[in-house]
Length: 406
Ligand code: ADP
Ligand code: ASP
Ligand code: MG
Image (cartoon, rainbow, N blue to C red):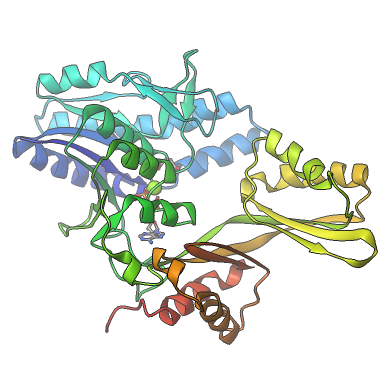
């Protein structure tokens, strides 16, 4: 007998028929004799709709209230699945985040899990119940409802699996596993059978949204085996585990893209000590995460400075920089939301030269202009026009020999 944590994403619970499909899967795991804890997302599109509704009320909804609203998506699906299982004569009970004692910090909208009590989960399991927990939500030490950031149900699932010392955390989604590129845009992408936590962390941080990055961090810290697989078939998916698979032998192992990027440029900034601090301190104080930064040295003691932020923070960052530009005497500030970042990743890159040249050449041949470049030991990222994202992913996938055989 094993303890299995199963998480079903938005498309897997998108309507009543799909919830029925989930209930059947859960029931068959239970019938095998295993203990089952199910973590659910909201129905596909529901979280987006709730955000949109809040913005119809006010352009800047209070973050505490927004979390109260967003948490309802997962509350709905959890209750429906518990009811469905009960109607099939299985003992099941739903728990919201606070009932499962998912304690987070106070950062509404992007809260971090600090502790999970799980007393009720354990008690329910002891009596052979199927426990259905609403993902994506927790509660802060003051009893306020919090949410864990987009895609946060993955993190709920892995954190609960870690707390319960589950044998496996299965992440059921709408693709068959983790691929060498997003299979929805790159038909030649190949499924990866096994991937190490570190490789998965790199992919998640560079845009592969199949797992929220924090869930991979938890999995690594607590050594939780994660199985990413489809809720629509019985195929084996991808195991994310604490091993290395000789990936060094491959120079590039995956291509990722991230459309959640926007860039801001300050033009003709005085090129003096302390200016960068003035530009970035207020951004950091607002909790906005800056990704890439480029500074060009110019003649005449002035320089242009460009950086990227998540799209959701674009308006706020632009407003902050408009003020700063006046203070420091920059000539102009402008921004662009129609950008994306494409990256090639591979630990094997460390020992090889020429990866950047191959990447730039492939993009050039597809007539894709590179706006910004950043590199680390194991990845190269380019910012390009958003419209070319899919094309860029496909040409890079081919250029690095990752395409599956026809
Ligand atoms: P869920 O709602 O089940 O959590 P998500 O939409 O969050 O699903 O994540 C699954 C999606 O991740 C896939 O539909 C796919 O488009 C996308 N994706 C991006 N990169 C990858 C990748 N390298 N491998 C698999 N899926 C990926
Ligand atoms: N419903 C939330 C979202 O859409 C959390 C999740 O699905 O993981 O981001
Ligand atoms: Mg997801």
